[in-house]
Image 1 (cartoon, one colour):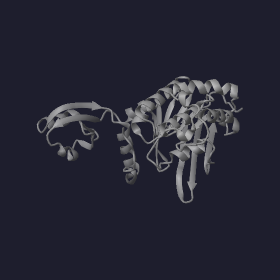
Image 2: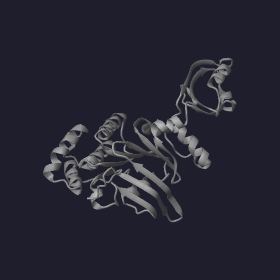
Image 3: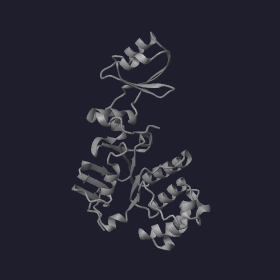
Image 4: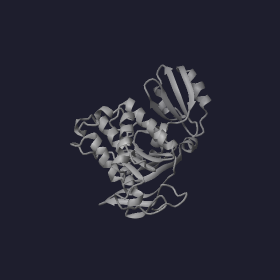
Length: 316
């Protein structure tokens, strides 16, 4: 089994992939460390799923190299990975317990090893009373939880989750989030793909933002936030604030209904803005805040590819 001491569970170097004339991924570098949650972020169609499939040797890159645990992809490295695709890959007519036994066997677990693990995870996911139901009789959210159990049943070292919260209500989203944090604390490497920035902002240790198959921004969440400074103001007021959009000290305004988030122009002094507002509006809240990951992404994409800045990114 390939196992280079100290090597990251996953590293991609200058990988590219085209489908016909469309370049889905273009010269991407990516490295995932053990004991971290890494967000692979971007709008729909940015190249996230293609990147994941190259990382897992589902697609071979046209150029570049993929290393898993320090070596080339192989059946041995595949058995150390858990992958949950965005599209459900469950056998609809199978019973839940039988399906999980089968998925465990594909990763090398015996029935004796698999059964107690399945029991524990069904209890944890509040699905114990569904063990004899056919998959097709479960709700979309229940099927998502079954697929997640199948992904981690063999205790993989690298866990790859493509849009893992799709179809889950807030309670089950929180349940899955807690398990991801526990797995990270146990030293597992987790890469998850999403276009929902708020989820990534709360969960990730590090991120890679891509658009049009190219890296837009990467780094630890702390460093990414620090790079963009404290140049945003959360503002609540009474009156007509439409002038803010053309104010000389303001780069952009993002309206959240109950308040607005104002991105300041480079070098702008927030105290000067406050002094100006006091004379024109009744200010109820004025707080200097870090820009959200959503706003950082919109700004960065707008700088590098203005036409793409309006693509679908979900905040909240």
